Every structure is written in structure tokens, then in C-alpha cells.
Image (tube, rainbow, N blue to C red; front, side, top):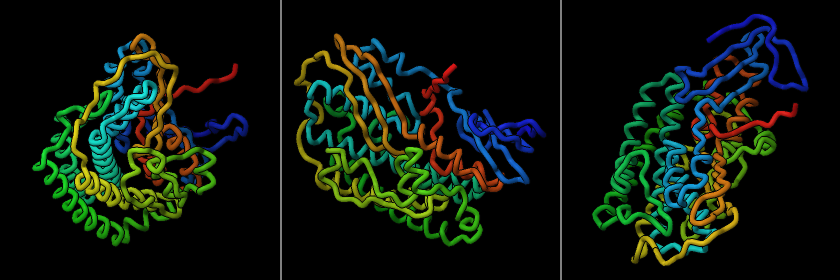
Amino acid sequence: MVTKIDGATTCNETERQVFETEIDMGTVHPAALEPYRVRLFVEDEIVKDAEITVGLNHRGIERIMEGLPVEKANALTEKVCGICSNGHIYNSCRVAEGAMGIEIPERAVYLRVLAEELERLHSHMLYLGHGSEVLCHETFAMRIFYIRESVMDLLYMMGGNRVQYGVSVLGGVRPRADLNLKEQQRVLETMDYIDDKVGAFAERFVSDPMVMSRITGTGELSQKQALDLHVTGPSLRATGYEYDYRTEMFEYEPFEYDIITQDGGDVRANILMRATEIFQSTRIIRQVIKNLPKGPVVTRDWEMTDAPVYKSYIEVPRGVCYHSYGLEDGKVRHSIVRTPSMSNIAAMQESCIGHPLQDAQLAIVSCDPCFTCTDRAIQVIKL
């Protein structure tokens, strides 16, 4: 951390002001799991303005995808993120399937939903664990990480890997990701375990007066601010706005679940938002196993055709994820990936303002940012 006295200016070029002190955090900082830079402009230990810079780990995956055969390009999208890897390959396969009119077997649709909800479970628990670490409550962090291991074991069982499972392929899912009766029973038993353990964790968490006093009212983002800044996913729902893109996905039509919201838009609302959504994911997973259709898990009854740019949106653990590309001679053209953290991180610049310096990092991580996932944004500056 470097402190500069005098001369620091705001990131807002239209309203330049001079603040007493600038605090730099990053690009590598113990409170952050990924590389990014935060500039906090403070007066009397209160944050007056903030600037978050990403783009430090840009890998150019979209450009690498250009010209690759579509199946190889789809597999590459799993490398975009180490947390929501399934969401990226799932959405990338959806693009080609939509562009070429490929119908997915019903059993494969259910298995894709299963993989996506398992990913949501482990991602939300990772958020709760990381948030507890930032709160300096190691006991809570280790407790939720231990529960999360049960989900990681299921993902390993399904895909043969704990990080990149390779469940979705063009036309369905890999045969390896199909579940026999014994594996289905194991999934159900794990859901019972998660409901029990996460319920006890949440009850203990909200009854801790020290923790609740630290997170209540911290990093508030109003619903109007969230909408104006295009916040998405649980961070938007934590402001009381009832919208979940899963309601617009045909894959989720057979399942019953509630759209969870919280009021306040502060750190408390964001934490409770994700903790409560865990129970909706276990509810969906039970319905997947109970009603899992019989039949094939992948179709090869399709021909490669050229297609213009096709767009696909899905709801991933952090919000709405966008993929698009066109096809020419079986190869990918004009690939674009937009992750939900892009707009959510930008909003966290606002959530810091007006709060004590020591709460700034807590406010930033409250949106569950994935910086590496987002490191493809560019800003066009007029000269």
C-alpha cells in the first residue's frame, strides 16, 4: 500500500477534484485473489472516489478462437475462467447449436442444468469463504470451504476434473458426464448434506453480532444505481430487483424455483443473497435427478453449415453471460465473450464512496468479482 500526499486527482475527467490522499492497492494484494488495481481517494479516512483497473491478465482467448474449428474453440472457452468454466463452454456450445439449429437430447438438457447448478453451488460457497477471509473470520471461511468440497467431489465425479469438467459438447454432453443410478443417489445425498450444513452455517453467521455490525450498511448500492450501471445477477437481486435470466432459458422451464431477492444492496444483502440461493440450487438439482429423462445424451445428427454471428445469453453464478460468434467453413469468426463481472466491478467503484477506508475492499469483493474472467474489456478513448 502506497500513500501519496497532495496532487492525487479523481478518475472522473469531467469533474476533476484534488483530494488529500490517494491509496493504491494492487496489482497484487493479500485481500485479493486476482490481479487488479484499486485507487482510493480519501479524506479523513473516508473514501471520496475510487478507480478500479482490470486488464492485467489479458490472454486474448477470443482472438485465439478466430479460425479454430468450432468444437476446438468451444473447448477453449472453458479456459476463460477457473470458477465458472462450465458456464462458458455451455454458452459457447449454445451459440453453435442455435446458429445451426441443432436439437439437444432432453437428457442432455437436464444434465447441463445439473452441471450449471453444481457450479453455482461451489461458486457461491467460494464467495462466502472468500468474504469470510476478508472479514478476517478464518473459522467461517474454513467451515464453508469444507462444505464446498462435497460439491467439488460431485463435479469431479461428473466430469473427471475439479475445475474444467468438459460436460457440454456440441449436440449435448459428453457420455462420461452421464450418471448411473448409484451416482444419482450420491447427488441426492450430497444435496441433503449441503442443505443441513449450509443452513447451520447461515444461522451461525447471521447470529454473530460482530460480523453483522461490520457488513450491515457497508458498501451500499441503491437499486437505481444498480440499474443505471447495468449490474446483473445476484448483485442486482441484492438491491431488491427481482430478475433472474434463468426464467428466460428454455432449459429451466421444467423446474420450479424461487427468485431470491434481498433489500439494501449492501455487503450483508449480497452475502445473504448467495447463501439463500444455494437452497434454490439444491431444489433444482433434486428435480433434475427425480425427473431425469431416459435416452441419449448427445446427437451427431447434424451437418456443419456456415452461419452469421449468433448470440447466446445464460445466467451464470455472477449474472448474465454473453457469447457470440459466426461460422465459416466450420471455423469460428468474430468471437465475443462478455462476462457479468464487467459491469458489476464497475459498480463497485460507486459502492466504496462514503465509507471508511478499511471497508473499501469489503465493498469491492461484495459483488463476487472475477477479474481474470473479465480481462478482455477495452476502453475506447477519444483523442
